[in-house]
Amino acid sequence: MKKSYKYLCLAVVFVMGMSAVTVKNDRLYEIAKNIEIFVNVYKELNTHYVDDIDPSQLMRTGIDAMVKSLDPYTNYISESQIQNYRIATEGKYDGIGAKSAEIDGKITIIEPFEGSPADKAGIKAGDIVLKINGKSTEGKSREDLNAIVRGVPGTSLDITIERPGKGMLKKTIERGSISRKNVPYAGMVSDEIGYISLTTFTANAGSNISKELKKLKKNDNLKGVILDLRSNGGGLLAEAINISNIFVPQGEEIVSTKCKVKERDQFFKTTKTPLDLDIPLAVMINGSSASASEIVSGVIQDMDRGIIIGQRSFGKGLVQNHKEVGYNNRLKVTTSKYYIPSGRCIQGMDYEDGMPVDIPDDQRSTFYTKNRRPVLDGGGVTPDIPLALPKVPNVIKGLTDKHMIFNYVTEWSNQRDSIAPVSEFKFTDYEAFKGYLSKNGFEYQTESEKLLEKLKEASDKEGFAFANDMDGLLSKIAMEKKNDLITYKDKIIDLIENDIVTRFYYQAGKTQQKLANDKEIEEAISVLTDTARYNSILKKG
Image (cartoon, rainbow, N blue to C red; front, top):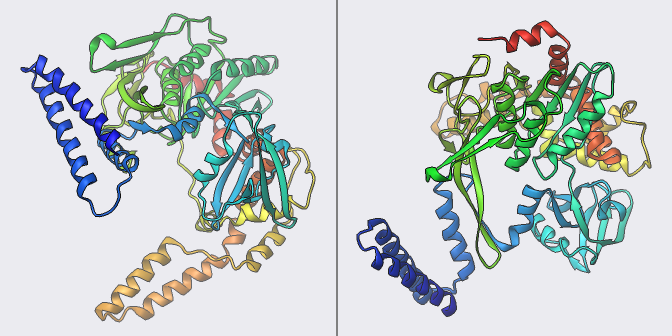
């Protein structure tokens, strides 16, 4: 504790020295004054607070509060969080290669990654982690588990799991360097239209898309390509430039970053020969497409190189850089905003609970694409073909929240060694699934029921005679709910099939299966095969 206080004092002395040299600089004086106040507060708390204080935790609380007051993307990254930082920026880390979650209070494997150490050791989705190296996981969080299983490649750990329907099993897993695929699937989605999915802008994203596009172009019938950036939260700016360069000419300025110090502004041009300037292109986005995804979709839209389909993107037009702050800790700090070819910035203007607040179109400034089509700034990229998000039925929310589909598929999959190829597989045990729900007492509450229950409780307290009316409404909702498993049978089967396919064919199979019933992809295929409609969208405004 004394040592940390000593370091804080040295920091104050240093900053005070700076201010002494430039006494007239009010800003430096304010910095020095407030750091001194901060140190004094810390000293008094350490000396007089009734309980012992953990200096690391106290400082972390202060730092987190400080960066939280700025924007959602300026964050402090502690040494223990560096692995998560590597996953986000590089798509790789050292560990066993499996995603986990807390289900019913137990740490459960959600997905072992294809070819990972966990996968090679026979770990399956649905396995409940009981012990690691002989120590119980009871009371441990998913973050605790990740901290334990990640380590130096080549080292091993012993893991005890419970596999539903199979009992307790022991596995030894040798850690390795895990690299997640940023292009999980590419292929033809119709006789004439190709498809490429990109999940994150990690290293080599541009070259991986180029490879897949070259493969698609070997098909003589290819008349258009879909680039799927839905739910892609972004990543490396360099990869966004590389991907844009696949479709737009060399030497074009496609993005610029502007910061507080004008001399530090940067301008980025395409530097390579493009792979294809002419093939009709559709870029899919949604509300979770952010940052680098918005650069690519915005560049394609601003240069009239293709059409954008889906929902308005997230609205993150800020650039972060990572600064070392000592002891293997880092500060991710927002340093600039980025602007795309039309001159617009898609950054949302305000935040609520860390999410950008939607800005009405009449409050957004108008810019123009290369063909003079009007486009708007602030609050994300608006698609050329906007599609409404399908509503999620209450019964599906209930099934998801209570992990009913996941748990059922775990039991179903553990009874089988293989399934038919993705293109042929069909789930035909729906009655058995309904029986599983009944056996496990599945129930769910709609938002309407929750509100009526609260209203009933409040009216009872206030003496209003509404109880019978509300009981009647609740009974009516209950009757409607009984039919939900029949009404939404096809949607539920689709979710079951997707989970099953993921167990046997990993992310590639999951993506392929989802495409079979994807209405948004059907819309993209429709416009790419209709040359007149495609050209009319991109024509001069």
